Image 1 (cartoon, one colour):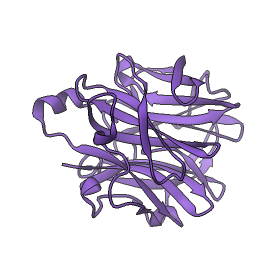
Image 2 (image 1 turned 60 degrees about the vertical axis):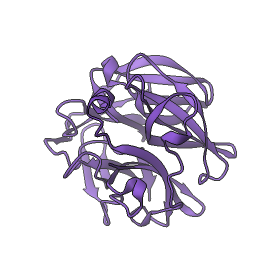
Image 3 (image 1 turned 90 degrees about the horizontal axis):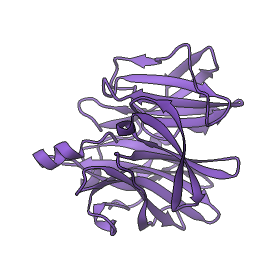
Image 4 (image 1 turned 135 degrees about the vertical axis):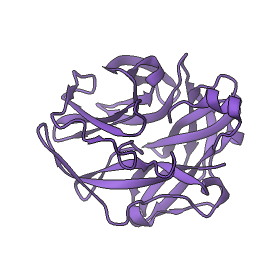
Length: 290
């Protein structure tokens, strides 16, 4: 989530973000597992937290690990927190695992070549930075700047022998979707000839979570920022993806997440990380209230 902490501290009119767990037989039928959020600022014990948001989770062995933005109420900067779970439903906050002199959020965590990596949003550093777990899940080190410039909600995945990077320039906010590709996660990264894929559309451009596979097709999630930032999540099936072409279509039932009936997500939702399990889809999400 783009840093607006300093403005929040001045106006005191900030939305309060929390994290929940949803499940369902298909993406368009996800429902909350619990009535209350599984993680909120109150669970953070090692820094003064204003909110938690942008969750990504990964299963290693018999344990689920969730990484997410924790907004530090004192500094107005996001840091990356960690929670763990044995069942993916009940979570225990552990600690802050990554902090920098610049804002961090959207901790896109993934495995590759037997190691764990993370690409957090770091637009204040004017770069997309790749981090590697020196000791998973608590110790992370920067590996390389994979793209210069101010980018947010950077999402990568591997398909057909290539790494694909979807990302959004910080300005104009939430309106442009760019695509890059590379043979290695460290680059060099090449701008797709059809990029920007989307321009001037704040309803479908901004990334909204991990890219996933469903029925052998990639699924891209996007934030619908109408009528305001953080309203809902839309899902798109990518039908053509190669170094010369790109085509996507919106899934039936999209938007798949939006303002809910519970207090914690009553005003909207803007993030999903969905995993296919033996019981259907299990997803960590976030939502907000005034």
